Length: 86
Image (cartoon, rainbow, N blue to C red; front, top):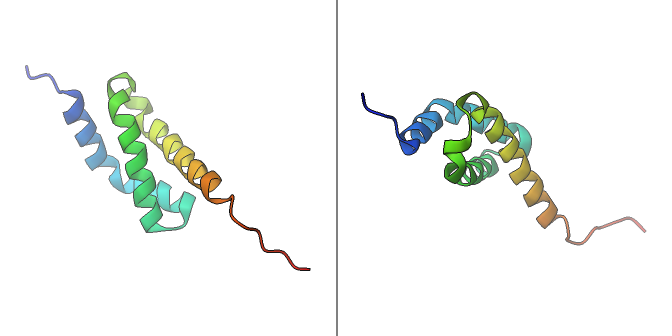
């Protein structure tokens, strides 16, 4: 029997769950373009760890990773000037 490699497993997961991951990203960010960046960041971070992520936990893991990526972006970009009324 052919053993499924981590890469094949990962690619199959991404194909099956891309829409759900994008929906999560859009819900968090409010933007499809930013959602694509968040999902790609989460997937890039998850791939090296894929063998250790249990299949039943993978969607929750990536959901949290998308949220963490969004929070990190928000923290980096919030340091700009704050305009206030006099």
